Image (cartoon, rainbow, N blue to C red):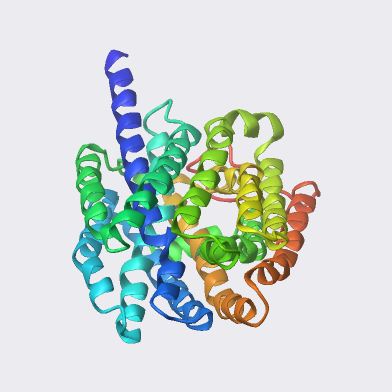
Length: 403
């Protein structure tokens, strides 16, 4: 019993450290990306094309990463390879910043593979939860949120003082800490049912479940405003008169406002139910896009970002929990990566040219208002489906096939 307790404590500490470093790196690579390209002199239309290309690359990387993790269970090696490659190529991003070809190659290879790890990390925790009793996704993910908030505030100040290129050596420092976390974290054990995992079998199993398919369709609709806010929030702040420090503070507000909700997500979902909690997060995502779209100044935009509390803070943990209840353990990584591929990358592929074109023709705010429409359709559709007789009860046996 004491050994199990020690395993739980060590696992929690290790994942907290990985969450902290992962989300700090995410801020460095994603938080300023669109704005940095704008500073380099690229138009919103070109930025939209780059983001679309990244989405296409993610569609390729994500299923491969999910299959690799389900088949070989070596999450540590995958993380180290992706971020090790980024450590080598990141300085070149600033050296060749005037080359459209290099910007495109760097984006679709390095940044896209990094973004593909977001759901892989969630699936890693979900699989470990089946082995180490007491691992709470909400508490671990909340540590990532507060780390992102601290990174957004602190690292943006460093970048303001020393320039955007300082993000390179900041990345190297954070990656060295991540390497330690990866070294001590356990890879999931192999279950008997995981021996015959393949891309074909995963697709066949997952698309047999009506709940999961409806979830994917509704999530895709919600992802258009969600991805638009993620990709263009820095451009919104800038277009309303904000600077790099304001963008960093805006990211701090987003991450800090979601902390307590994600920390207590398990309690919230237990009380309201997974489906309703996720549905409210979907609805909140559409509302957040509307609030941001109506902001007249950078200050109001920062206040509007407090809506992260009832949008992202419920949406992402809700999706992870919903998938965990609907999908057999053998296919959790594949299911989460498929969700990320179809509902994040596909939304980025389809939406990015429109995001950039609409932002350039009208404004970033108008673009967010337009994109919010699909979010309302997706969220309301999901809530109605989950309350209809068509909804299937979650799996009672995590190793069982779908009904």
